Image (tube, rainbow, N blue to C red; front, side, top):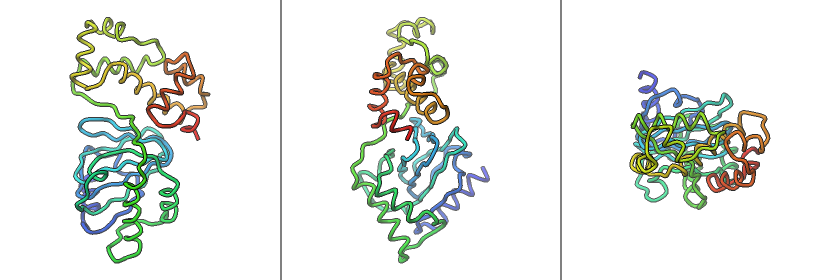
Length: 258
């Protein structure tokens, strides 16, 4: 709790400044929020951001925009994760800046970040660094990029969480709604209703996202080729794996690997 209070105090102690932080601190903290909006950029690894409703997955070379006073917690499971946090003063802005969203880092944004790669600390209105970072923020809403859509709804339903844990451990198998219902001692209708009422998503949609998330981890953390990864997560058809990966991430597995 002491570290949490220190972070919030650091972020919000100068309400009018833009704060750049490169320390990896947030992943060790419980759910929290701050008055400033947050631009969190991920280079290397995969970051996991938890909110009250969903778990978000942020792959390398992507960023997440977090509106001010939005409860969240960052986690990760790779040692080579490198993130940059830029906190912006609260101001009246609508549309893009009111919504939490994950987007790819464009070439323009990448060049702007490279230009400011050594910046750290608070920057105040009237300085050219403040104006540069403000322009960087304004660029985000003008790029009209597709959102990265891998986000898993969460639930406190213990029965459903046990089913999901079982699915995570058996992704390389041929998993069906019927077999999962039988193994769980439920009817197909009851399991279907449980997913829809608790997670607002179908069994098939949830399973597809679980498999693609696991594929992202295997691509990042192993030397398996794409065919081996496809089999490891339950795909017998490499083309189907590649197509589903693209639908959910807006890129092919080979692009993600690069």
